Length: 406
Image (cartoon, rainbow, N blue to C red):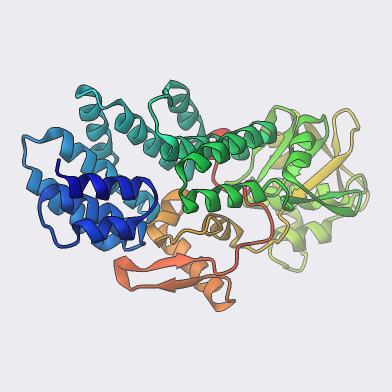
């Protein structure tokens, strides 16, 4: 490797993409193209970066397995930064295996961390934790090690393990100082702010107050019966009853939980769960059916009793019932939660992360754009969406974590 390539690589490692470009901008040999691609990615031109890396991989040829694998890992990192979550994961896995076979433990470990980071983004937390436990971070250099610690912190935040998240962020800060890359410091600061920001509203006996993540964690560890309107579930300790796919039952359960220990009139429940329709005999009959279904669904941890005027929800041991609601109950809050990471997302990436159809996500983005909460740039497949103002509340409870609730 010649001196210019070495100097460009050192500049990239030090967080100086412009310095790297100054050394290789006029060269078109494969190593220079690869370094140019990485530098362009650091500057935010993901499309040009991807094209340069593919050109470099072709230039290296079929026999340069190691160099091609490194290009594939770099391209996967760009796809992840661009929130192109549909990027073929098989190519990244093959690159990781090639790196391991050639003894490049540092880049192989980094490739594995990229795979895990994608799992976290799309809510596959159980799988991400298993892979993270198998990953040895010792070969990682300071910058990749910082990203590893951010993954650990992200998993801990979604699992509401605030103590573990703080410890991981402290380790990330130490390694980021060694790396000297400003972008890493910004990401750590953004992750740390979620620990002190309001994460949810607790509604208990008609009174509301904002909770931080550690307070939500303590609430979940208590024996209180909680109607979780952030993750759409009824929970008590380790017992969780998912209700995301039962919107009518969830609406009835929430209304009952908000008014507990008082009862709720039948007309109130009908208006709340059946989209404001005036109660007639058919609606009262449907209410009886839905209440019966709700009783069956939550019977292991709560009971519903009929009263003269309506129904009342109670815990089986007469403990208090709390509702945990979003700080800002926008119907598209989950989309905002993904965009709050500061990255530019495609609608297809959001759909994959949220487990929704792309058309549903596009409707949500259009509504948010009309209210000025999100903005877009680019057109067609290159269109990306961002959040111009980061929400002033923590989004960990709104991010996808399907494996823990399904």
